[in-house]
Image (cartoon, rainbow, N blue to C red; front, side, top):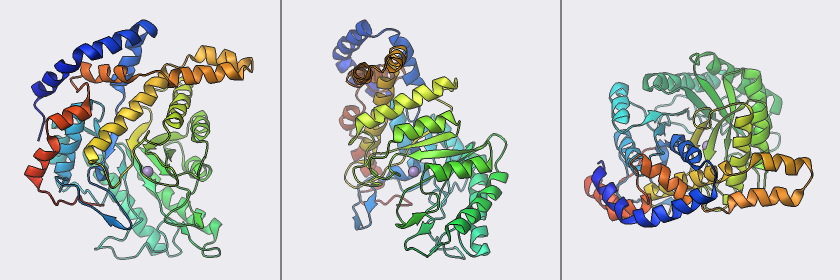
Length: 424
Ligand SMILES: [Mn+2]
């Protein structure tokens, strides 16, 4: 389904007076507001193909109703999001959960919804039904060459699908590691993995990037072969200029200073992509901004500082993607909340007066530094984000619009109440 544009406009009309009041107040307070709004318009966040269905835990899964049953329906769902928020203009595919059987048709369908294809994701952390050899003891780190070669071949296949769709990056996340001391020789595991990544890297088209994603623990609990940003940076540096580190917010040990990691990776020009989610304990995959919005703001503060230092485009030079999936919300409402939270943190960070901050840092005026950051963080920027959406034809209030138009009810009518998304 697609939403009738005039219905979004009609609902916007009823909110316009209140919105204009809030926006005008900010305009009187903040210099160069139109520049900030334009940056918000340009900023797009990719939606992963696995986030459109209700996720689960290892204990169970509860169907949500009206969930997409095919890649085509997933694209349709992201089209709905993009119609409402005008900031979800890309899709990130996971292979083999979403193999495009007819890439030309899939590409055309995505284009008809205004969507492009973001990073491709490979999967050597599960065994597929038709797979010859098992990844039980790892994929690229494996002691057996045949299994390492199978993992390489899979990644080459993912690149091939990506080329057909017009993607230009590959994200490799490996669950490789060990759960018990002595199980692995760390150095051999690293060298095997590096060798496999080198072979995949060699197959990248000239304009492609490879993102090496790290994770501190889970599913392995003693060691992970790409366990932190230092290890990822080692691989990316050894691989070459097309390889970058990817930061997933949920993949750190508790209380890690992610904003500092981001700052240093940007300094080294080795930050490539970003996976947004939030967590309280581990890789909880909760809605970004739902638990630690101040941390999200501090991360954006460093992202902007670092990207500006290198003259990088905020919108295009890094891969921005949501990576979350959970149990209790309507996935589309959750994704609307996620994109909103990201844009709010980005807008707040754009308000930081960097000259003043630099001066205060130089003078070791610690109190002033905190005041500058928190002054930006405590500004209610929601009218700016709404203005950016509205100027592009999106909804002033996406979730209210989604509910008023009974989108989920309509999807249930079309697809049924007990549908299961592929891949989860
Ligand atoms: Mn991730």
